[in-house]
Length: 346
Image (cartoon, rainbow, N blue to C red; front, side, top):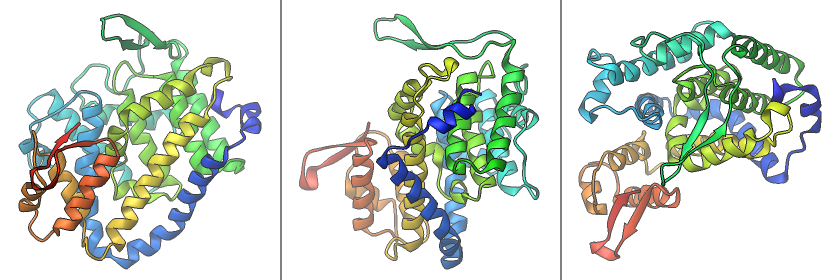
C-alpha cells in the first residue's frame, strides 16, 4: 500500500506541530487509566452519550438522518428499524457494540472489514458486505452544477488484493514497531479511503475501523468521546486534508502530513474533552456533553437562558463555556449582545 511502502516510511519527517500533536496524544493515553479510575461514575454517562453521537454523526455525514425521537430507541435497541435509514442507524450501533465489547482482540483482516460494512449498511442492500463490482470516482459538485473528479480510487478488479495488502502491511507495521501506532492507524485510514473498496458506506467503515484500531492500540477514548461528532464538526477540514494527502497517492508521491495533522488533532481534541468531563469539578458527570447535545438538538435561534432552562442542574456558566467553545469550533454563530444575544447552528 502506498502509505506503507518502506521508502515512504523512511522519508517521513514530521513537522514540529505534528510531533507536538502526536506527543500530546501519547501523553493522554498514559493518563487515561487514571481518569477512568478517578471517576467511574462518569463513564456510563459518557459511553451512552458517545454512542448516540457517533451513530448520529457518522450517518449524518453520509446524508442519513432519522427523527430525533427515534434516535435513542434505535441506538439502545428498544425500537425496531422501520426503513433503510433506521436500519443503518441500528447497524452502526451494532458495529460499535461489537468493537467495544469483543472479548478477544479483533484482528485487522479483509473479512473484518467486510463484516463492518455489512453491519453499517444495515443489511438492507444487496451489496452489503461485498467489495464494489464497478469502478468508482470521488466527485465534487460545483455550485454551477459542474461535476469535477477529485480522485479516482483503486479499480474494482484490484480492490480485493489492495485491501489484503493494506491489512497485511498494517499488521507488519505494528509488529515491526518502526512507527508510532497512531501514525500507522492514520495511514491505514487514508489508504482505505483512497482504495474506496465499497460502492457505498466507505466513510462509515473508515470511522468504524478507526475506532477498532485505536481500541487495539490501547487508545480507548473513542468509547467515551464521539470521534464521529468531532469529524462532523470539522467536516470541511476533513475533506481538505483528505484531498491534499490523496494527490499523488497512486504513485506513492503524496504528502501524508495534512492528513496526519487532521487525524491527530481529532484524537487530541477527544482526549481533551475526556479529561474535561472527568476532571472538571463544576461540570459533574457528563454535563458538558449533555449541554452540547441539547444545543445541537435545538432548532432555529435560541438564547443562553433558553438552553439553561432545558438543563436543570447544569450551571449557566458551564452552558456559556460550551456555547463559546462550539462558536470557536465553527459550529455556532452569535448575533447581538447581552440579554438579546441569539445563537444559531451554522
